Amino acid sequence: MQIHQYENNGLKIILDVPSGSVHVADDLFYEAVGLLNDNDDRAAVREQLAAAHDAAEVDEMLAEIDELRASGTLFSPDEYQPHIEAFSHHKTVVKALCLHIAHDCNLACRYCFAEEGEYHGRRALMSYETGRKALDFLVRESGSRVNLEVDFFGGEPLMNWQVVKDLVAYGRSLEKEHNKNFRFTLTTNGVLLNDEVMAFCNREMDNVVLSIDGRREVHDRMRPFRSGQGSYDLILPKFLEFARQRRELGLKYYVRGTFTHFNLDFANDVLHLADLGFDQISVEPVVAPKEEPYAIKPEDIPVILEQYDILAREMIRREKANKGFNFFHFMIDLTGGPCVYKRLTGCGSGTEYLAVTPWGDLYPCHQFVGQEGFLLGNVDDGVVRQDTVQTFKGCNVYAKEECRQCFARFYCSGGCAANSYNFTGRIDDTYEIGCILQKKRVECAIMLKAALAD
Image (cartoon, rainbow, N blue to C red; front, top):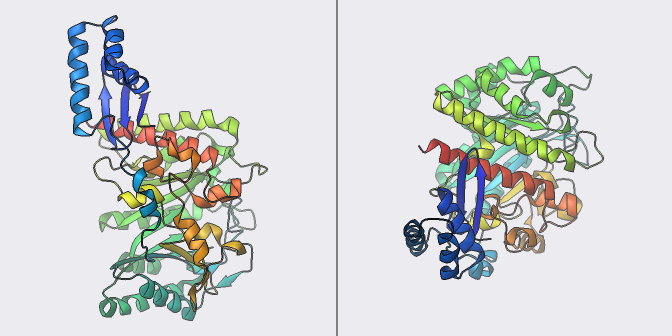
């Protein structure tokens, strides 16, 4: 698919897929592009249009389309596909680690893929020695790349807070000698968050991710303590204060939630978080086995798609009232965007991005941890399963049948390999529900840009 046309919020939008160019069209332009997309006989298309429209206007419109075609912003060729083999063998270096600093958690979130921090294994905390080896591995395998990313993840990282602090200090000690810059990130449920943690993160963490699902009843249903008691009232004041500090200091943060079958009206949760004062928000659909009662079901999809439309329209209204906020699924860069390699291959799991268990095993990403078939190596020996790495390198938008003709392929880059594996048994396939939702989010994101460009 080279051209994608759709209508949203009263706008007729045309996306030239290979170039990423977006055109907001009037009725005649929209109709003309649609006909030309289906029929390359320009004379026949002109005749068909002239039968229903003023001939002079049709000729003017076709001339404009010809100019756009010549400029490479409409009906542009796919210049990437002929070179995909070269991209598949693109030399990569490790640039990011997800450090599972704690395979333990003080909450019992019902949808947790990490099994309350156990990851199909045992509860454990990462030692300083193992973490140090992981950072040494990252420096060693990062080649000449300067900026390196380390996410302290869990379970709940604050259950191993001293080791987090010690590893940050160790990382800083490596920077000058090796010409590296560590960007640290912390993901937390907020239970153990306090003034000391906030102050340290404000000094050292490039980003913090704060886990909250939205309205109190929604959050407490899915993110309780093991006793069954909800966690919303405990974490909310701390998250509000932390977000305020990060915002005033010009530092990055975002609140990250999950919606399930139980709160299909999730736009209300996003807006609830915005009304509380959070201006960087991500609320993701749960990915769960279909037998789970909270899993997204095929019959839920129309409701979810409508929720994205509701949310997009409300975001336009708030932005025009100077009360805007960022919703991460609607953030698209239409001018530059990610590099070509990222557009074709995605997040880099299994190649540029690896997860490290508390005992030092290496996996393609946090969602593969505990699945022994994806064990790549360890921090002592490095990556020893190069065959698995090559398999991940081969995952791109042209290797997946469903992606090749999808208009959203250069925005989602083929989707999540872990979701594909969990639902199809293959990392080079696609998760159908995820694809449908992703395409809708892309359409809404483009519409938002168009609507706010006026």
